[in-house]
Length: 102
Ligand code: FES
Image (cartoon, rainbow, N blue to C red):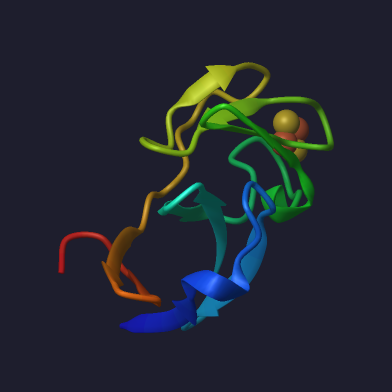
C-alpha cells in the first residue's frame, strides 16, 4: 500500500497528516527531504502533525515528547516507544509514502 503527495504541496517543517489505508501518517518536509512517521504519538492519543518541528525532531503538543523524524526513535520522554517509520521515495516533485519493508 502506498500513497502520493507533491513535494511542492508541503511547506518546509510544517507537518501534514495523510491517510495510508487505515493508518494516519505524519509527513514532514525538511528542505528537500521528506520524512514520514506514524501520526499518533506512541505515548497517548495525540496527533503529531499538530506538533512543532525543530532540527530533525517533532514535538508532541500534548506532553512534550520528542521524536527523531529520521528514525522514529524517542529523543525526549515521556514517550518510551518509537514511532513506526514509513518509507519515502522521491521522483521529482512526486513523493510516495509506503509501508515499511516493501
Ligand atoms: S501524547 Fe504525546 S507525549 Fe503524551
